[in-house]
Image (cartoon, rainbow, N blue to C red; front, side, top):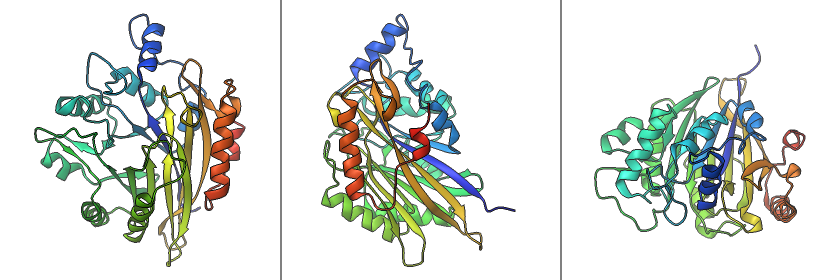
Length: 333
């Protein structure tokens, strides 16, 4: 019998700016219609055994608004589910844009879609019950943990909980994850400086701490531009993947570096003793074409995509460690 294998896919920030809302409402004739946004990349998303998206907005109800206080319609979340995403990350600096009510409504909306998620909770009892969440993908037991540096100065007024970055709390969550049977631990973290193509010292130090405490996957978001990826080798021979930032997935941002992002595909396998391991990873670039149509960067029609691709590939070529480009994706039509 061949060894067990699994393929995970992580993508960056799924945002919902006013320009996206306006386009979806116009297309839907007063309702929000996101058909076509993900058609070009959905086959790749669905090819993965499990796909994870960073949902950077609240589902806070009407009126639906973009920056600076995001409230996305339920239809946006449904479109991501239809595109093939299996898991939503919710700990980000915009999750309290509609205050406590928006947080609770976001949880309820995703629960109604039967989509698992992490990073926010109705109350302490819910967090105790749901965190850490251990998902099973092709037999691999993977703990999903999600944290944010802050929430734009907005504080909770009731019993709800947001997972903020705290090394001691993360260490306890990781230990608890191992205690309930997680073979691998993934920490998805909202950190760093916006629009910087390289990680800051705080990110590097935190990544070192996470890897040293046994985290197998560190997946970052928030800068809205890509940042490097490193496949690190531990003393015991196992590997840990650090992705500092996947950039934007779908957004209404307009500068060249924010118009696209990276997806990272992670391969899991078992060794001869049955131990679960991170086997390898590669990346692919996506770009937001006119009409908010997300496409492989090689297929982009917008001439500005060349600048995005050139800058991203230059960063990855210089700074990535054992995380190459995914040649299969570049051939996807």
